[in-house]
Amino acid sequence: MIPEKLRFNNADKYIEIVENHSDDYMRVSEIIKEYPNSEDIVKKLRDMFLNVADFDAEGNPCVGNGDAQLDQIKAGLVKTIVGDSKFDADSYPIEIIDEFSIALIAYGVSTCKVLRNPV
Image 1: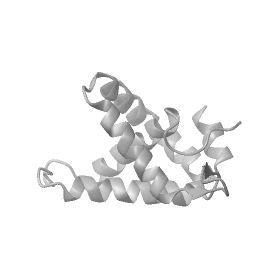
Image 2: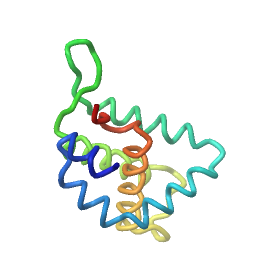
Image 3: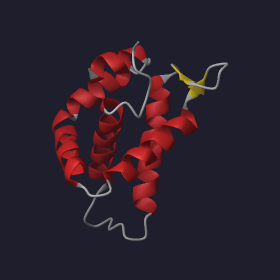
């Protein structure tokens, strides 16, 4: 489902990126299901998407440049995480933050909160 949704949204680059991080996505997906305030994470992802989405004449999100949108969301996630006062750069190198951000984006795509669904 994720590859089809990414292709529909002009996010072909992310098809390969998400595939490369499928194990990270599975771990994040399991953790979020058990996280007590997971709806807050999903809302934040949706807000981040809406901030970069293209909108049609009726004001609804529509298909745009999905790769660019996801790049912007990823950059925003990294900035939010690294900028948090509790962030420990010694324990979490940027590579780990990138992996987590990609997995979180994949989760957002899979839960239909990020990008448009093929209709």
